[in-house]
Image (cartoon, rainbow, N blue to C red; front, side):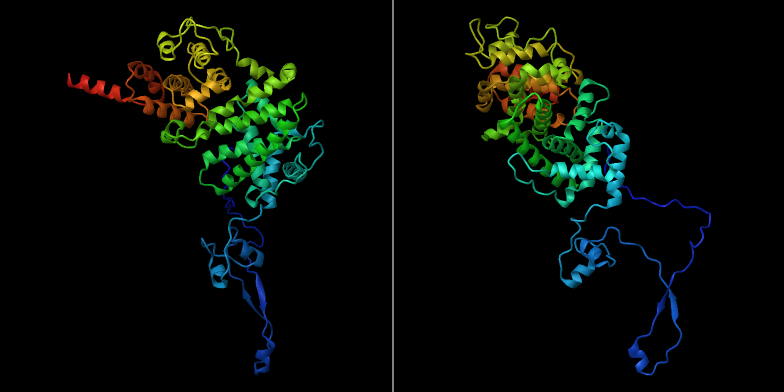
Amino acid sequence: MDDMRPKTQTRPRTSRHVQGQNMAFRIPNYKSKDSIACGSEATGQVYHSRRSHRKSRAGCVNCKQRRVKCDEAKPGCLRCQKHGIDCDYTSQPARPQKTNSIVSQFIKTNPELISIDSLASSMSLMTVADKLNELLQSPSATGTQSPRLLNSTSTARTMEALHHFHQGPAFTEGQTPIGVVMRRMVELAFETPFLMHAIIASATTHLCTLLPDNEDYRLAEAYHWQQTIHQYSTEVSTNITRSNMDKLYSTCLMITMHSFIQETFNPRASFVFTTDPTALTWLRLQGGLRYLLQHTQRWLPQSMWWTVFMESRHPSLDFEDKRPGRVGLDPDLADLCGVTDDSTVEGNPCLWPLRMLMGLLPFERGSGSFQLYNTWMGRLENPFYECLLRKEPPALVLLAWWLGLMCYVEEWWVEMRVRSECTAICMFLEDSCDPLVLKLLEFPASCCGYLLRHEQERARILELE
């Protein structure tokens, strides 16, 4: 069900004759009393065969309510134009048959969600759909009622997104630890409104990348992310316990993933070309999980995320290596960052990010190292962010090297952002007068496919020779 576009159902043609198939339905044509009064003789009832017609299944709301045929003209049908009223195609209610079909398919392919021990046990299919609506519209922690779903985010859309998240390869990666956990998230979400909103929002965001012109998905995406962030923020600020840590981990990861997404390749939209500090939010938010881990560390081994978190560790990696000095560092990067034998992580904000980066470089570049790469951005601290906002070349080069590694990761929510930001840093620094900066830009530029100006000039010289 990865492709959620509605498919037109056509009846199979057959040569067999079905009884009554070619019968002409007839209706009486009664003469009015006025015609009889004018001298017309009342004769027997006259029947005329009813003309065949096509039902207007995609007609506007006004015509459907009046139960009249709509010509389906857009932006306004002829009937609405004739009566001088606004024609509305956007707020049609979801058809029960379609909703039931989606719910039925979802439950059929996910039987564990209606097992005996499940919250959905013994529920009918439509009751499960009602449960979803009730869950997503339940009162928030502040006691206020969430706004009701827009027509475009109907039960059908919700079930589409839930099925897409639970079955689609974009989220559940087979029997890998993270794939197993993502499927368990769905079960957990049936008792957690903010997590269910996050799941529906994430799946709808992916559907928006597949069907970018679908306005219904855009409206649903905005609504569910708004509800996710509001309810999650309330929960984090008031209640972090062992019982809800997995719900908070899961929602936090969904939010950080969403903040990283960039829809199109656009280097000019990068933070390096603006003074707006919020342009770096996509990176700052990646540290949100660290806050939760600090408050739940004593319960962490009991988490369903424990195995996934442990995968981000490797015997040869020590992200807590905060040794002073240059030992183990690339000499050129150490020179650019001003690291001396006496430098400390407290005195040089680039030292620790550089040490972490050096630990990532030996690993094979690709999606297999994705979780290791992710750990780097999740551990960055405020002093380094401040260097990035001031557009200091050492910090920008370190970020560009990490983005270069991420260019080898094949994840739908990663590609556009890393290519855009890596290219932007190369564009921003390629006019530098520092030959060391230009030299160190060559690695990230080759990863994102950007040809630096000094490399272009070098190529022209070689051609002339």
